[in-house]
Length: 416
Image 1 (cartoon, rainbow, N blue to C red):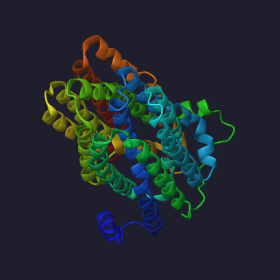
Image 2 (image 1 turned 90 degrees about the vertical axis):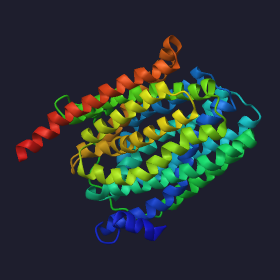
Image 3 (image 1 turned 120 degrees about the horizontal axis):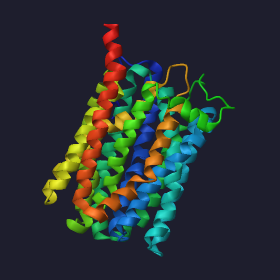
Image 4 (image 1 turned 135 degrees about the vertical axis):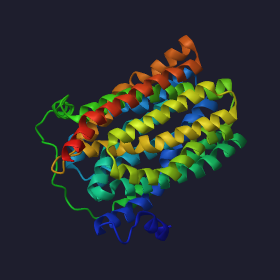
């Protein structure tokens, strides 16, 4: 694997030595961590099929998973001042504990009980995201960050493909086997993040000011005169279109199409991750050359058409095509979401200020959007919700393009 990855990223000739060293350590540990994250999607399928969760219960897991991001702003100072490796270890360890406790649902198979256990993972995850994004700035050279990040992401997507090809068929054969898989995956994730602790890092010069109130830090970066404000505003619009879709999509697959575990695995995990794995590296190079406004605008538009295609879907083949469009869209959205905030942080600034604001706003929309999607579905129908999401994402795409014209295009024009 190592020689192939070296050639893939131009490892020997172009990338600085410290970034090569970091990539070597991080990519190897990330394989095991990627298995851990891929099982969050398996949990969503298990909850839908084995627990027979209602649409309202499904909306709760997406509300929890995203509204938990509200705590990121309170973790800002701790992540900025602490060892990022130790923070990563603690957050993955908590998630691994959550996975191990899911084994108890073999004796008490109640949807709310499983959701409560999984909430440990959901509440640890935003701190992990905040720390991991900051960690990427710390370990990778700015000119190659998108490329190196996309390679490790592609590794994760390939892992998800393997998971989707193996676990759902086993769940079709023995639905309760998830109680064995989740503890094993939790242990593997802990081992992966524990190995990463041996990595040697230079101390960083940027930290959040200790006496600055957390919400003052939040509003200082969300200045209406600055481009980051508009980036977040239209990411908020996108977030509503994205999160409204998720619980409705699971219900649509179960109630209208009656998919089994294997078909669920193909549609929910395999097809999107196949596209994400094959396209992320190329789009990582694209991100290194372009601003996040244009990247987000293009891929929000593609995601809008995924919803439109889902609206017209009549059978499993239509769904598979729609999820292919989704995979293309998310390969770009994933880069914009993870690396976009770093674009706005100056070299002398703490990136956590921007990252925590970005994640915090994800939590704000997570409080409302999944429930709103269920409300729209109850009032108008499942398919009609997809059409509403299509319109919302069109607005988000157009808004990002307008922001690009205002802040980036005009600046480039002045330079010329």
